[in-house]
Image (cartoon, rainbow, N blue to C red; front, side):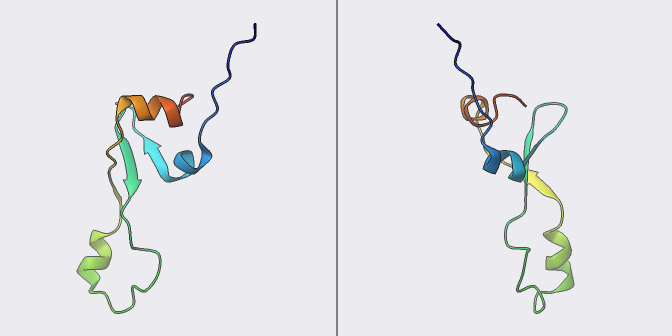
Length: 66
């Protein structure tokens, strides 16, 4: 009997980043467009990554090979 091949969920893989210590990071939402009227401090605050609440069970389900 063949072993089940678990596939990586590509939509998760494209949007999330796994750190060396196993933290899951995602980009801050709402920074792609309609930013012309935002203050510069808000624009700069949206740069970077924030922790993404994904448990170990979900992480293994959606990103088994990472």
